[in-house]
Length: 254
View (cartoon, rainbow, N blue to C red):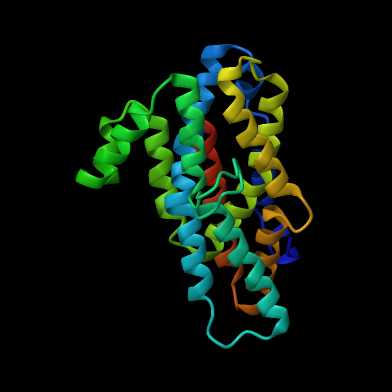
């Protein structure tokens, strides 16, 4: 990542928290069926937020940063970023079933149904969002506990800042697949978790392959920092917001 970012005063704490995220203690306990079911529920909420807040904010800030026509070098970075957005929120790249063009939340919804035997909780939540809005719907849903609601609130605030949004997206694309690897090594072998297992395996490939989502999001940060005048205060604030985001994310696993 750009040396202007890596020299920031808060980067060491960010790096430690990033490691903590990928090795959360609950990931090692997923041989227990109830713990594994809870991880599916947690991941369903995380995936909802990623598809409804993080990625749309990422795209909004990318387009908001464009003030001139793109040359070939800028165009390549932008094209990769647009591919990342497409492969997150309107895609068929997990289960690869004909006619799919949706966000990964709906892949996780399918995994939730296999584990719980129904779509009741996620469908009730989505219906409530449509009727009364997200903020009230989470208060009524059995899927969303206080820690997850606090995390969602923090995410909404952090993604108001362009650089913080780019940072949390890059950190997510690095830490999430590492966490999935830990879960996969420990996950109960019951076939109720087969869809969830496939979901995680596909994300590891998508995020960590060459030119995958992880490297694409870092490339955009490098481009953004290199093409915009950012003060040390701007950068430090964005790093601190990213630290707060990870802190709140870790709380959802406790």
